[in-house]
Structures are given as structure tokens and as C-alpha cells.
Image 1 (tube, rainbow, N blue to C red):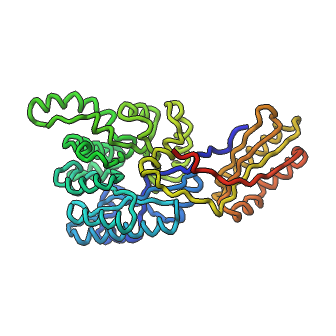
Image 2 (image 1 turned 180 degrees about the vertical axis):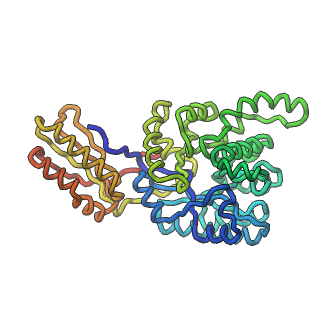
Image 3 (image 1 turned 135 degrees about the horizontal axis):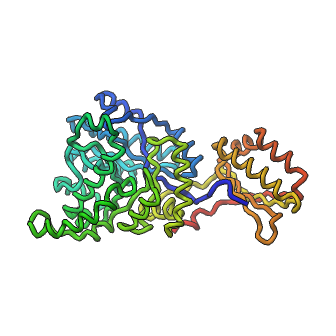
Length: 430
């Protein structure tokens, strides 16, 4: 019997944004809502959590969106970053296991950025830092950033990159064609190539740098870079760099458009253990994200990739396997063992599939309905059921679609046994 939904343990979203009230007010104060060429989306923690539950995401890593909160005043920018970092630290504390956050830093002021990084790690318990590809013309890889890179290397920090508006753009062009459609990919690639050219990743080998959006243009541009590098070195324009050593330090999230072609190209640069799931919430419609996530989970095995690695294990290794796992004290997890009249198994399956489909689509508190048939006895059905809490379960058994299932299958079911179980997520994490 087909599963209503897939159930991967403790899934982690490496690419999501918190548009906090403080950040949004600061950006509006400077009339910068359209700085990146499109509106900043609304965001609410409860809506984010509801999306996570529907999509099967256990933990989301929060980062500050664009634009970078810098408008010429370093102290003002530092205060804006501090407020966002503290808001996210509070979210992490209030929702154990649901959120991590990578701190925002007030670049291009390196001294203030160092000060905020120390505070974020030592006081707020930040899980990493987020760096814009450029902070008003100061691109990653710039030697002026070396003191910050050295500190992040010392902390073995996770560094999540995110594209921002280039320092010089044609205003009409970005008004006509959104930055996110092409320039963000070019911008990310530009910053990573600059880091490689300055040997940043080899000189600071303990940093774990996450490149967004399926590697952006790196897979397409890297062969050209490799062929040009010896020529540029011979001309004295560039220094020799070990490209493979640089690339080995990079991780890649699959936010954006993880097509089969994109995955194949990405695997020319890296290995499956450096691929991570990312949603880009709330910049993409929730229904689109949920469908894309299901599609990705189904297609990864065709590339020789275990979905559990991309959705969970790689992220836990990246963060040192210290992502807290909720103990599910409020959740209901049970195994339903059902024996059906063999002559009515097909009719029963139709009822079960229908109620599962409707429940998963319309009830956020229904987290998993995974149905299985015994190979040796097809009349024996097992259903793994996971509900957010007892209230979600009570709500689940009230609607007409559930009553239709119960009444329609009453004469088909010979026996029903409900077995309450405790999830053993820890045993599935490497």
C-alpha cells in the first residue's frame, strides 16, 4: 500500500530567514524595503512553525534577509544586528529544537563585526554567522576581512553565505529583471571565486562555508576558472591556488531550483555529504516549497544520494551533531496494526488513501500517516501515525472525512491494535 507521506527523521532546513519586527522597522526607517528589487515578505514565527510541521521540518536555521542593515552609521548598524541576534536567540530558547540562528554582523565595519560575532557566540549561543556576498562593495575574500575570518576559523564556525545586491548595478535593469532570477547567482559565484582567488578557504580551513542556491553559477563557471588560472598565474595577475583544496571546504544548500541537471552539475564540484536541504522560507510560497521538497526527496536516490543525509545527517555533522532534538513530550506516535477482510482489501485501501490524503493536506497537527502492507499477508496493514499533540489527534478524528473512513471500513476490519511507541531519533543520527 502506498505511503501517504514520507517520514524522514529530524529534518533540518539550512536556508530560511526571520524577518523580525525590529529588522523590518529598521529597514523601513531608511526606506530600503525595495533595496533588493522586490518587497521583503511578511514573516511570523507561528506561521513559520506551522509550515515546518506541514513540510516535516524539525529545525530551521534562521538568517537575516537582505538588505544588509548598513546605511553609513556603524553604531546604528551594530545596534540593528544586535537586536536581530537577540530576537533570534529568544526564538531559539522559546522553541527548543525548532530553530538555530546564524548571527548577523554589521559589515563593512570589521571591528564592529568582530565585536558582534564574539557577543553572538559567547553570550547568545549563536550557531554560526551569516555573511552577505558583499557589504556595500566589500566582497568576501577581501584581505581587509582577514581578522574576522581568522576569528571564525578559530571558532570552527559555520558560515552561511547569502547573495545581496551587487555594489554597482543598472537600476533600470534590476527593476525590469529581478535580481533573484540571475544576479543573485552571479553575485554568490563572484564572492566565492574571490575567496578562492585570495586563498581564504585554505588559509582558514576550520570555517565551514555554505554556498546557497545549488552552488549558483559555480558548477558552470568552475571549468573556465580552472583553465584560466594557469594563464593568469603565468602573467603574474593571480597567485597560485589549490582549487580542489578550496572546494573541499564548501557545502551547498539546495534552495532555489534543485533540478536533476543542477544536482548532476553540483556533484562535479562536491560529494553528497556536502549537500544540504534549504527552503528559502518565506521568500517562496509555502505550497510551492512543500511540493518541491517532496519532489527532491523522491529524486535524490536517482543520483545515488540518501535523502536522509541531505535532509538531516549532513547538517548535524556540519554543526557538530549538537542540534538539539526535541523529546516529543507532547507528540503522539503510534503504530496501528490492522487486519482486513482479504476480499475487501482493495476497497479498504481506497478509504485509507483518501482519509490520509485529506488529513495531510488540511490538518497541520497530523504530521505523518505512513501506511504499509505485510508482504507475507497483504490483508495485514500497518500505519505509522504521528500527531503534534493530543489536541491534534482529537481534532483529527472529528471531521467528516475521518468519519467516512471509520463508517465505511467498519465491516472490513477484522481486528485493530494501536501500539503507542517512542521515537528513537538519536539512533538514526550519525
